[in-house]
Amino acid sequence: MARTTDYVGKKYQNLTILSYAGKQGNEIIWKCRCDCGKELLIMNNNLMRKKVVSCGCLKNPNSEQFKDAAKKRIFSFIEIVNDCWIWIGATRHNGVAYTSYQYQQLSPVKYFYELENAKVPKNWCFKRTCSSPRCVNPKHHININVSQIRQENIKKQRKTNENAD
Image (tube, rainbow, N blue to C red; front, top):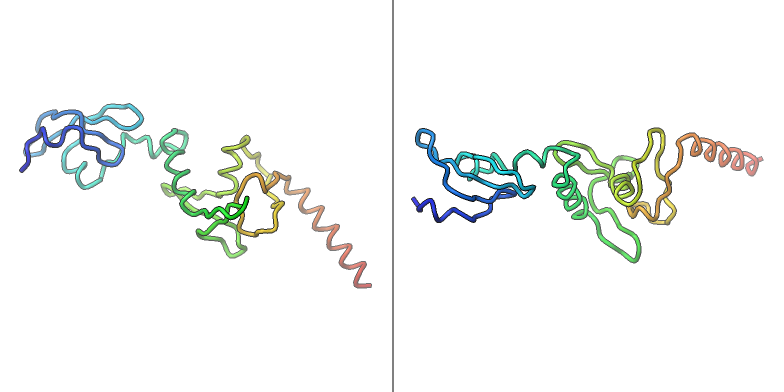
């Protein structure tokens, strides 16, 4: 087995080994620092088998580390063509882009819109302003109330019925 000094300074996921902290039975314990700055003690087995990859900050949706990791994941499913951000990830049956991170479903359009603007209120959704159905660029979507969309659809239906007559 390698000496304990060989592991000091090595990084495992979001944790960096700072020092040897002792033993518990036959298990080595390391003092580690998470990328968020928090220091904690971790058993060697949990660290090497990636059972522990952070101090827990990656599980908190309000933490910066969670947001950064989610952003990286979502951007990995985007192909930029001209000014559109084309979604190449999963879509629902109606063609709407979606993904998940840490067991939470995320709408890429909503996620990027909220990064650029403010939180989207309940009963509001997005209306695409560009011609690409898989575009998730927040600048190509407007935030609109669900009742406004219903009214627009009713108007379209009436025009269609008038033209049919």
